[in-house]
Amino acid sequence: MTGEHIVRSYDTDIDELVNTISEMGGLAESQVAGALAALTRRDVEAAERVITADARLDEIEEKVDQMSIHLFARRQPMARDLRLIAMSLKISNDLERVGDYAASVAKRAKRLDPGLQLNAIGSLGRMGALVQDMLTDVLDAYIERDDRQAMSVWHRDAEVDDFYDSLFRELITYVLEDPRTTSACIDLLFIAKNLERIGDHATNIAERVHYILHGDRINRVRSEPA
Image (cartoon, rainbow, N blue to C red; front, side):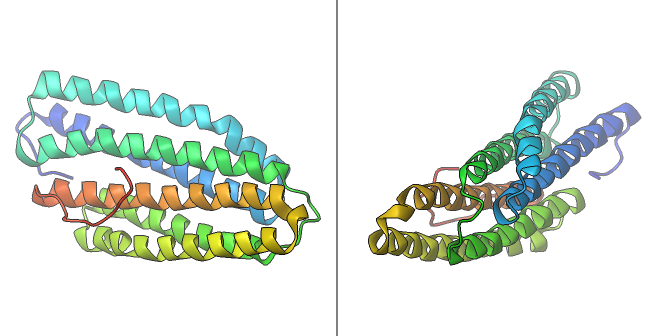
């Protein structure tokens, strides 16, 4: 992944860290997919699985913390290795937050009336599919050290923001036209915001990949915190 070191066990430790992030990413992807199934198909069992599995992401994040501390203390990494380890710590936090947002989507999806028919639910499904693709692509970029793919994800963040703005206006219109939809629309607004935040974390990971490879940060114009 990062070139052979004289001490082979160092390469093994680095590979184990990358593989653990990959495992965590796979679980985060599964969480997002389950949350979307809970929303678009009203799959209560999928929602329960997402909520229950959230603790596993917390466990893996703690494992990444311990592995990184070990690498800092024992290997005294430099240059790209140092950036890889530091950014892997941040990426694990991004993925843990993705899991939290997916669990929030699942919880709110469970509350929706199964008979609720709003076009916004289909729009949320499309927004979720975009976010899911971003997460998959950026994790591939991390594994493959592919800056071009990472930047492709980074640029897609604007599309997610546009989706959110459009959904916000649509849901407010529903409330104004029929106040009986207020409770459901509030849940859908929170779901839209959670999906938007998942997109932000995918974008964060893209920036981390760029930093690993080049050692500089992307100049960005975003109001959201990293």
